[in-house]
Image (cartoon, rainbow, N blue to C red; front, side):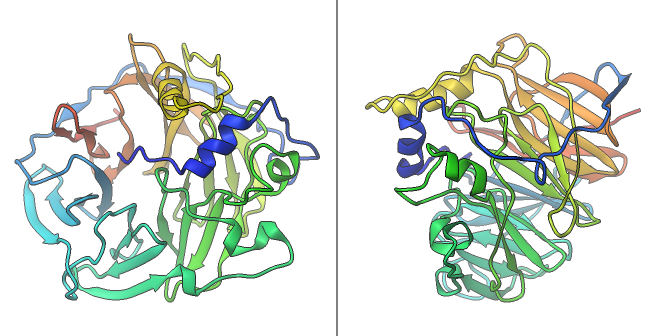
Length: 371
């Protein structure tokens, strides 16, 4: 996992006080539906899948398509292809300039599209598309496709990609990724930014044009601290499900990003005593410490009709937990392996992302069933 956080963003966060958003959030954060709880799953057996040794930097991204699972190494630019039992089917790409290589020395984001193509994002908002045979078919340099507007919150130059938190999704002819503010005047320390800035950039996946900016910062972000990030998924019907680190609710939007409903239950035994970061030489360490010791919602995935959300508790007894929702009804909240995230579904199992530990030099993959 890439833990780099843009210094400009950290500076804005660290300098912030207890700023609160003003104005109405009704159009983006309507009242939640009547949540229900019907616990059907009390425990889950997470089965570790044996993996072969691979040449890896223990930093990278996961993908799933059909009955195959993919891992792209962030530093070596390799794309590993596995079957559902963890057998290595091939190693593809690697750094280079040919049509079968990836011209990125540091992969910042990766996604498999709904047609099985592979998208890789570099450090300068450059994205490269490879087909299912691992041949490069397209390249996009977003710096060459800007949107200019008198409204700063609808202007491409206002939004660098959220490196260190890239959530890249390619579906329905569109590319979506997280963005943050890069403006020294308007940033997350100001009410104006809080009520107007967008969090997701959308572009045409054919040529990288037509940038659009979607979403808002969560109204649960009352104190400008470390818990500022969002994660999202786009389902097969084109609906967005957005979750935020400090917010117990998830928000659902239609294809045109019109609010539909929100749902979700607070996690168990979460330490939410968040602190305000203070600018100092230790601000980055303080940021990491907050995520290590406090509770926050870490991922969202929709697979086989169910919504999966993971969260970190801040408790050593069970650091990572998994919630499962059938519609808006919570049917499970169970302890999971550390840093567990749901990747997708290959019948009859649900699969995790690859869990990477650079210090221990381990890479793990899990599967589980819901009976």
